[in-house]
Length: 376
Ligand code: G3I
Image 1: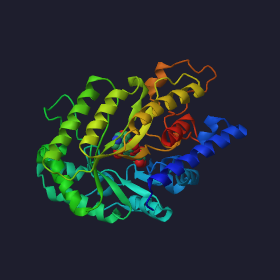
Image 2 (image 1 turned 90 degrees about the vertical axis):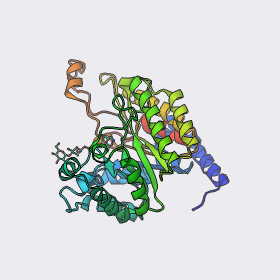
Image 3 (image 1 turned 45 degrees about the horizontal axis):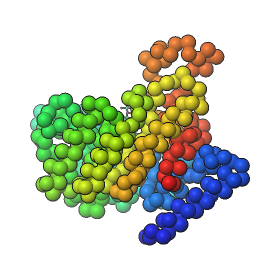
Image 4 (image 1 turned 120 degrees about the vertical axis):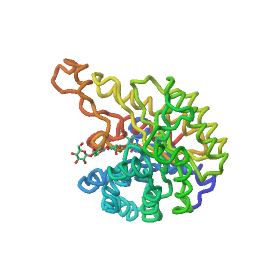
């Protein structure tokens, strides 16, 4: 469906009307916003909204499935598309999990966000040996050629390269990854060119983390990422956008809105699209009350999203999990040790609370913050 400006505006008005009416009926604005589905709020702005999923959770947890269908228009495979999962031994494809996620998406009219073709964090052992001892681009190309056409009908955005930047090592800011060691810095453009061959219409992305805070490493990473993009642009490499992972971390303070804004203006200047690809919040204070923890998480989410969503080239938001039940973020043993005695009633901190739904799939303040920021 093609949406014109009037229909988008009227959808937004409809959403505002629904929230106001619920508030009027005594629900309170927070509760009303919590009841507004993320999908409704995102679609009012023509954004997609998604979550990362692991195939086994999708398979066995019907509450998770229901929550996805209520809240999301897109799914990102948390593991199943990565090279280590897809081709654990040379030539042996393991795409059952990925096929299941793609079929679920097709059946329910959801999109899939393709994550991730080249990532140093998920190279099968055999390929690591190949990259180290007898580098052969054909194997990388085969992986791209296997995955992209198989899911091309349901995937629009592809993380072709994930996390290529590393600060404090090389002048060009590229991570000293097995791909770089095997093929030199041109591996990035090579993979984007190949991706274009196997997905002529897909949106080709580079996905990066650690771009949000006011510290030396993240300042450097923002700068080096822009430099990489500038080089790729000057060589006409097919790159359509960037993914901002957005693993927010309250231990680092609060997001540096001005720097994010400036960074996104530069990205806009390059004519690139932006997707928030892995939003979640690592907490800093597990001893506070659940209410306080949820407020802190929600406030940080709002600060981040209002900064990012101010840019017209942003196309979607994906959280790295929908419910705390399936978050990769854990309260570590070290953190538990640091808070010794904090929970006198013996309750403990429970899970990290950095996703929109709690472990029972009930919307938290982060959900309301997302719904209201999306709706604004
Ligand atoms: O399924 C096995 C289980 O059978 C085994 O007992 C257990 C022992 O460690 O491992 C389980 O697999 C783990 C899997 O997550 C499922 O929990 C893998 O070891 C572990 O490496 C894997 O981690 C994933 C990681 O990427 C590496 O692929 C995380 O779930 C996933 O959230 C994480 O996602 C990354 C993004 O792709 C890129 N950005 C950062 C983000 C978070 O690290």
